[in-house]
Every structure is written in C-alpha cells, then in structure tokens.
Image (cartoon, rainbow, N blue to C red; front, top):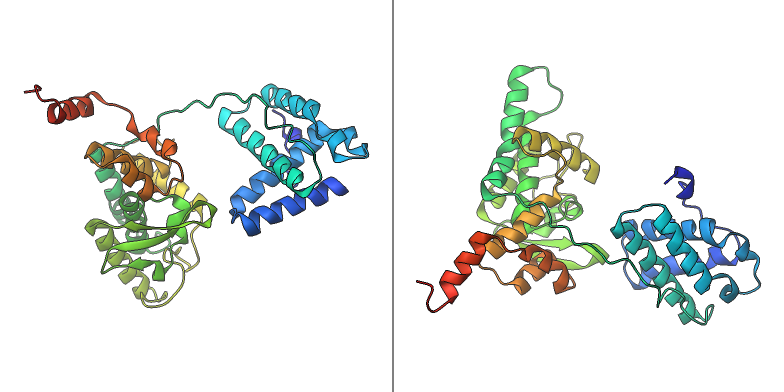
Length: 331
C-alpha cells in the first residue's frame, strides 16, 4: 500500500462531512471515554474513507446519497486491494460502522450501510508466551546488562544503578500485574500501595481496575524508589508519575519497547517480542497453575471472556495434568 493512500495529515475534510466526523470523535471522547490512541486511529480511518472512497460523492446533496451500500462495498474492495492485516481491516470497518451508527442516531443517515457488510473472519494467532525460566532470565536482564555495560565503560552516561533498578521494577510489575506497557508507564505514586501489594490501573477506555503485585515486584519497586530518592526525584510520598527517565521526565511506550529489545537480546530471546509477551505469559502461567478463566479475565481487564480464551491453548502437559486430576480412573 502506498503512503499516499493513508493520509499522514490527520486534518478533517472540510464541509459537513468534516463536521460530522468532529462531532463523532467528540462523542467518543466525552461519552465513551475513548483513549487518545483510539481517537487518532478512528480519525485516520474516517479521513482515509473520505479521501479514497467518497471523493466526488461528497458533492451529493444528502449524506444518504454519499454514504450508502455502494460506498461501503467499494471501501471493502479497497481494503482488500491494500493487503492489510486482517486486524487492521476489521478495525477500519468497525470505525466506519460506529460512525454510521452515530449518524443514524443523529438523524444524518437513514440506514447504516456497514451493518450487513460481510467482514473477513478474524484469525486468532497464539500469543508469544515465555516459559517460567525465560521470564526469570528476562526479569534479571536489566541488572546483568547495566552491570556489564558500566564495568566496560566507566564513562557511561547516565546512572546505571538507577536504570537497572527502574527497568527491573517495570518488568516485574508488568509480569506480576499482567499490565499493558501503557498502564505501567501511566502509574502514579498514589496508585501503588506497597503495604497491601495492590496497584490501581487505568486501562483501555479509561477503565480502572486493581491488580495484585507479588513480593518480587514490591521488592523491585522499593529498590527503584530508593534510587529515585537518591537522584533527587520526588520521594515515595510525593505525587506524580512513578517511572521516570534519567532526566526526571515520564517514560514513553517507545522507549520501554526499545530497551526491552536490549534485554531480550541479553537473555537470548527473540528480539521481535514486545513487552506484551510478559502480559501474555502472566495469563498463560496463571491458567497453567489452575486459575479459572473468569478470574484471569478480571485481572487482565478484558471486557469479554472470548478475548481471554486465546490463552487457553492446550498443551500436552496441561491436558495430562487436568486428566490425572479430574478423571476417576486416571491412575
């Protein structure tokens, strides 16, 4: 797909269609608590639909004459021509379907042309799951990496002990709480109770949930907070972002992902994995140990149980263990 087909500029089109998109995005933000990432994605998808499908049809006197079944089918053909990933295609169709529902509700459209549109079936790929030993090695990687880096280059910029403590703490809380990266870097000091071992997360759609932190994660957090205080950043009783860079500013998702690849390499793991592999491993390890699916759903913050079911892939070991526990004549 050429770069011209997906606009780099997120500016809305002029005229009534631009006003409708603006009202829809405002509705998502104010009434549906959509995240900034979702708003940007939907804005891009809607602008792409207008630029590539409607075109001259925008000159039609009514919205119904422009956004109709013919335009919906044409968009589906365009999506297939662009050879997008199935998940991207489904998201774009979902954005248009939601937009048209909004237009019907507002009285700008009589029928939603995307409702009966046949969508490509979504293929569920099994997530990358690390073994318990691989997770253990990965969680120890920041200490190994920074110790070796500092010993080989005493003029190394930054604070290696601070970076090691911070990154150990980030990896520990992601795995211990089953967090997304965005949830971990948005944590504030007030969100974490080091006594009870509970953290408050703000997930997708600005939904809040509680997660439990194990002893290793709490220990890593205490070490990191001690390093923070040593460098003069806000003490543990102060408010503000929990995880900071070496200048005292907040971390970004990109910076965590970039450093994660360093630690994957340090542990001899595939560098195409992302920090989300720790969240996947959290869910898989809980289920392997006998946790019920509904509890894991709550811990992950999934709104639908079907989303959590991707972690119930059967391994021969789990199958045999369940059989030996449950079958009356297994022994």
